[in-house]
Length: 335
Image 1 (cartoon, rainbow, N blue to C red):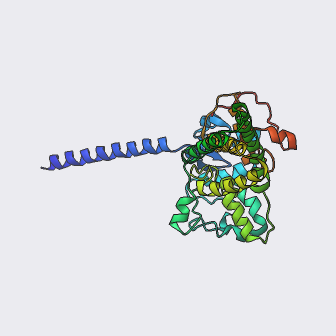
Image 2 (cartoon, rainbow, N blue to C red; image 1 turned 135 degrees about the vertical axis):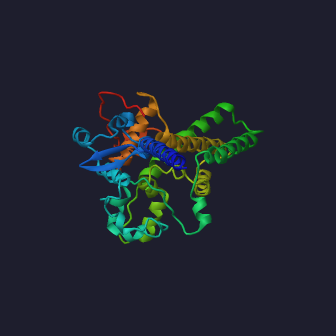
């Protein structure tokens, strides 16, 4: 009987050891620990977002001290690094203690006053709740595929309306094509103006409502750039903006030209939102058009918040002197 008990005890011990080894292996797989200034960080979740690409994968269980010396990083990068702090060590993140991240945050940002614009450009890797209302919160979350689902039918409706309004007129297919192309071109101007003048406007420190509005429109994206449900524009808000643009176009362009231009602008917008999503989550090949767009957009987020407003093109950054000059790299980035 004693031998049976000893055998059972040994078997349980071996089973426990195996389970412990399996858990350790799983933890090792789920963790990607790096150190900086004798502090440890688990950056597993950040690997896919790192603006410098896969180079970070070589530093598992190693120190980043020399890497940071040789490759200076922005304050935004160091602020973000603190979000991955291990072992409940204290985080040194400027201004974050002024807000309650466990509560809806939209009503709190206005209290930051003159600290707001510095705070909003110091990114974190967190999920944010904006509203107390579950309905409003759900409407603020937008998966990327809603953009083509909502806006391609709108574009087709404009094209159909343009065709029906051109019946019995002298409006030709060539004129319709030129109008459509003009609509796409107008979108590139709108994209730049909206991003530079609306999304990056600076409200006075005491204008709580304007700060909240800025955070809702674009500040949230700079604060939490890795939230994949807040990378594209919610269709309800987009439709309201589209109505305003439609009204302005109606004052300028006659029918049926109006419909084809609107179709072109809608096409430009669809491309903008999908390209913007791709620049955050896609892995463009080195030295391609999208490769340089992604590098440009990463710099806009992490270093140069006040320039580099073009997302789908750098055209208007060239024209208005807000171009980010990308430095020549010894080796192309691989994402």
